[in-house]
Image 1 (cartoon, rainbow, N blue to C red):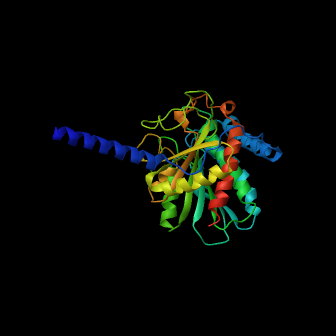
Image 2: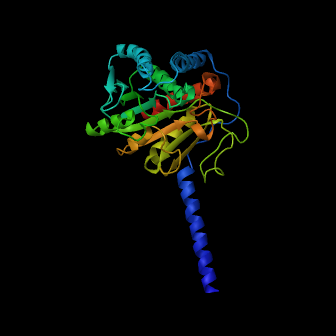
Image 3: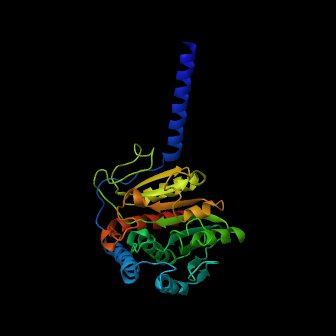
Length: 335
């Protein structure tokens, strides 16, 4: 009888530990947006048009974008450079090409820096512009993230903020480069560490444009299915356990401003999907980093497929995400 009581106590203790861990990882501050959003106004519709223009240029005008696929990646780089270069007319804004070392095809990151009014740590926004193998036009993965980064760069450099801002468009995120030395974000993160740069935050904008209100449209790696909505109508914030403080702070700010639902979790990096983008590179160097995503393969049936085309993207919702991110970044860059 005594052994039975001990076994029950141990089992209850384990349940309590698991429940406490899940709460620690998934309980987030603020309230996710709910209800009907007001229609986009004229200026917001202009942002929507800019997002669509960038995704079209990358996924329709160029298509697959890989360092070893003819001049496709260099064409994408030229387009992105042409979008960012005019921003350098603003005092304190610079743009440089960061060639990747020991990588075939001469790939490069594009690095836009905007000085702050203080010498504080850098707030970094990143997105990869290459596409997965197999010929996908990569409208969502990751034309959506790159278009968001371009719009944010243009809007955030209009005035100075207390902290310096950096926008980096990375080459070579997709396989076979992911986690390898030729990965663009890994080389940049290592450079940040070698230069002794402090980062206030790193946000990886990854696959952000696919949404669905259909029941069952959203999947999760176990054991998260019972904790989050089954409809893919939200934007996700994902971090590892070491980035929990940044994730909670950024999501709380986003929720104050955004007119789109949002969910967040700080999870073990070993869980499938948690580290599958450029934020992973910054974790390796000890920086806090968060991925902003529509959850990619857990929602979008076109992920890494030939069907990842521009007509699948919800540009109105992507616009709402960008507006929320802009306000969030302004909050975080205040110091």
